[in-house]
Image (cartoon, rainbow, N blue to C red; front, side, top):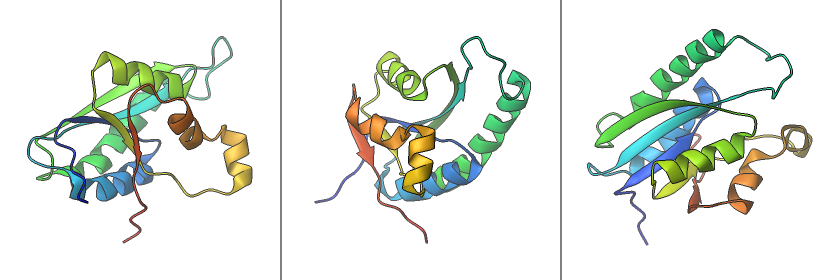
Length: 143
């Protein structure tokens, strides 16, 4: 069976390396009719002081988007980017997915120990368990 994303997919990315790696893994599944919406969620502290200024985080998001675009060029018909803000990363991703009427949320699970997963709340697990749209976990492409 061959999988191709012909519609719109939302791709959450956390950092430049994650963005580039995810884009490399996603690229073979795209077609000229694909629209890829790459998002970076800036997690707000919900009343507590934020870890970095909004400006610093927006600059970092632009760096993420630049690295993510490379592997997608010539593979997807359209690549869009968006910075999202929210106190819960997973909820923010699904809110954007529903608002933008995407066909699926597509991500590549990041490497990490079980300890790291416990500390981070295991976003990948929550993406699958709390899905409000189809979710596709791409196989790792370390090449």
